[in-house]
Image (tube, rainbow, N blue to C red):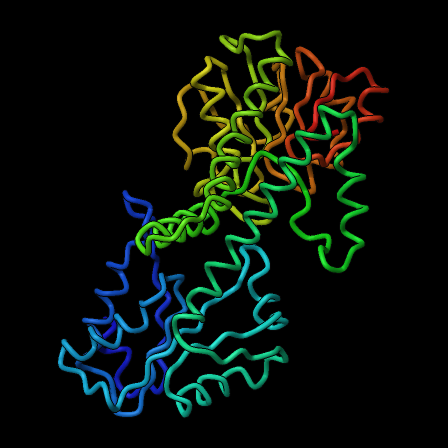
Length: 361
């Protein structure tokens, strides 16, 4: 167990889940459990380093738990060292980190933790534990805000007959903005952004602080999911009952099999609730891991498309960009596609007789 693993270890990294609780807060039960388990086995001079995404005050909480469990807290260091790895690119993100954050009240301990990253050529931000914990939440909340902002711009582009892809290109060349997270879509998802925005909002409420901007981001994300359903309804004439739909993608983004809080799964589930009959294909995420009424798994795009009156692209897998759309069109009942990721060429598809609907274009 963990208590055996930490014996004689100089550095102990806590990398455990902090799932969303019923009230939106971060559930720290895994943190508490592992700290209590290892407290009596830590060596003098060892450092407990928290990598998990946790609310402000958790480093102090770990220190308190170690003391209550009988650990010699004066001889054990505790630090916050949040991770900023992305699913699908985690090794590259570690080796070529944009920054390393170390939160610690003890300067000597902070130096020791910083030295672990001597081989990583990145700025090291040494700060207090509370600020380190907030940096992680603020970073994720900002990225979620950027996504929701671009989704709102995309919706406005549709109303004003502008092309959000061109707008994003023109914005991205501004170095103050950059190109990342400027792609509109069905909304953000995954194991981090929904959970972390919710936890930050809960922290704001608990502190008596107003945060209407973040609430708007969260509300806008749910609304964006629903806009995809509205688009699907319009494409099939207003009623999805009994309509066969090919679902391309279930993972929350490309290059991962993670379906946790996936906007693709949300949209698929809502289509099912509207009465659609779904066949889903994802190159990595198993449809068997997603329980949705009236949805079956397909082993290829062609199989998913066979007899469908609507094809919905929900994950931006590269293989979906380069499909043989003449062949796919022959398999479909109707050549109608809802491209929620804007990865297809609308001009080329319309030239082939497809009805194309994207997001903001």
